[in-house]
Image (cartoon, rainbow, N blue to C red; front, side):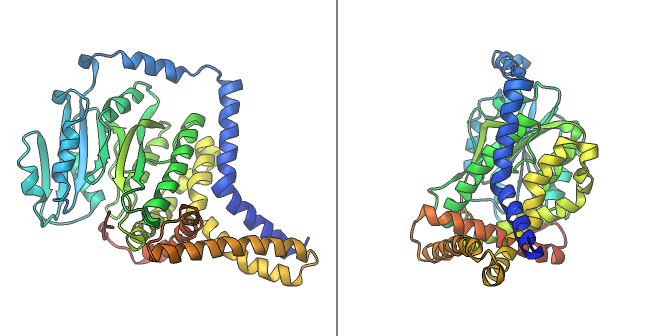
Length: 401
């Protein structure tokens, strides 16, 4: 085997492992753990005990919402908060706003059960979280976004998870309304998050979920550490820092946050580029977590589920095509590489046609998959350049459907 052929199969393995192989390996490891190593799931017993708690035993919690110019959703979000199945005297609602120049603050002042922490200067979400957390006195805090809506049982379900002393953070499930626009933005994002939710659940069943989504997650308040104000993925950084303290991030799929998909692919691009840049930033700032000798299985999960996606794999993906063309032209095993080239060409053709249909507002869920997959990886490359010019903690919000 030539050097080029060896490189081709290494890159192919990296791409396959990142998006398919890790999920398969994770599923196998979880089955081994459940059937041979720990056949009795004590967590389920703990949950059963939790179900019979009366309201007097429930802890006080803070529902923590950061907002910037969210006047359109304030009333809907507050209705959602009031529908939560949790004792009202134990549910503290805190809104932290900075720099809002619409009617967000005026609308919030109408609600007597809201603690509003606002400043006229816009410093960004991470700065707002750092500022607001100084006023939180409850043992648990649940973070949720202003434009997402959580199910009525979410708070109780999250609180149950904290009965296990090893749990320091609980990640709720993010669900995307795939009918919000009916296009590639919501369709692709919705399919992506369904797969992500499956992986997150398996990650927790093996050891720990790798990161929480800001739409809905909770922490033990004493574990909070202030983050640099230019942090792009505050939810990911905060939750992983807690995991690095030997706590686990539990995954609670019975507590979920529903949000609309991005208005269109241009708006979705804003999100993906920022998230990719934040991923690269996180890999650098959490570089200690790359050491499996110190963090063991957590490092294995972190590298497999996150680091590869945000660093090596996109480069490997886009190197495969030119390398494949070169091998199909000059390798002795030409037929093998012609077959690979045919498969790659079909995938790219499906992605480009999916892009064309999306621009024409034509629905095709099958072609959303290659289109959204290529779209995500292109934006990881763009994220590198975004990170190089990023300063401060603010960014342009993507518009939702």
